[in-house]
Length: 116
Image (cartoon, rainbow, N blue to C red; front, side, top):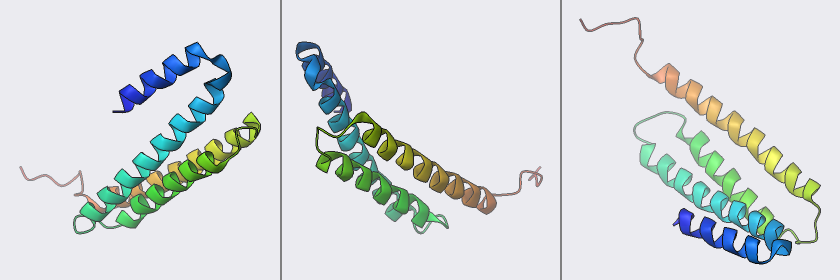
């Protein structure tokens, strides 16, 4: 589905370059919303398997928030505002995923222990 959306965005961009920025923002917005929904669903499914699944759910909420912020942002807003939104999201998302990774690593078996 994402491939079809990307192709449509490319066709629109090539046929009307003035819409390129708007299309790009909408693609990022919908990607963030869909990704956020999937992250929350994964966190719910993993809640009995791992500790710290709330971090994955929280990253999903941040993704959805970015998507909605991009959708409600006026097309007249300059590229710097969009850059700040995406940059802030990338930092917050990265911190949460690193924290989740560290938590999951601490949950796993000790690699020094061998069953042999």
